[in-house]
Length: 380
Image 1 (cartoon, rainbow, N blue to C red):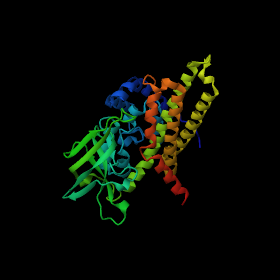
Image 2: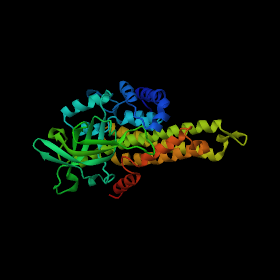
Image 3: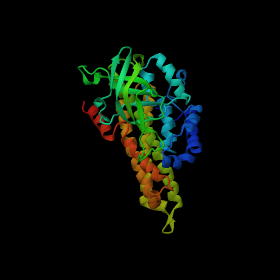
Image 4: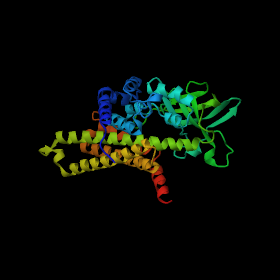
């Protein structure tokens, strides 16, 4: 395998980082403090082809594939993971449409997202069903030519600002196999009966929109079914296998940002007559941060590359997701410790990264879920 990035990917990497530094960094503290979503930055990112860049050009994407999208995610998250989410998950849910939807669905929904005109959401998690996806209770019952949807969803990224959602619901409650009860359905977010409530007071990624969504007798045409009825659980598992690579790439970005800042601070900060970077304990922390980041980067790049070769390794994606969360939390903690008391106050960005990092061990499958997934494969 050639580990060198192509000239095109090098240019993409540089462009994404410069965009983040110029457009996102100046708003970082304000958006975190006020929990502010940033549609104007999303639209600027779309003009550069940074939204849903993994999609082929025929559907409005830049055609960079999963690998290119991982690089974009890494560089944007290196500056601000919260605002960065408004870019990298503006297409959240579109993965299911691309892989399982009809040609009409793809052409209707994907290009506007790539252009920054629309935002999608994946409505899967429920108040009583997170890691246990098959435990969801939202139902879609056929009535004439429609589905009538009732239920509620929790922790939905882009929940209050999305234009449409990909909703996982029970359509076949009497199916002999539990995993064959579910379907994925496209639901425009402005339909009667939908209530969206923004979740405030999050620990981190506060610039990203997160919501609770309730469905009360929401009518959707049956033609909005994605793929085959009863295949929703299997489709959403495929969806997570792909998006976990993106989450792992977020881990690279925030970890690298922590290392960059910690090195800079260690060189500037003086104690006992010398830079604190000369203290061996601090050097050990910086070295371990660098080792973990490089290990994670190689794992994520390989997982992303395999997707683009149509030979995805789902176990590797789970490994990358697990390592991404672990690395981010370790690096954020180490960077804060190197900053000492200054790292604990809002004037320094490491306190924000410390808060942001933890979500990488929670969403898209908890670290415990990833471990069980990996172990199950090993024990076959």
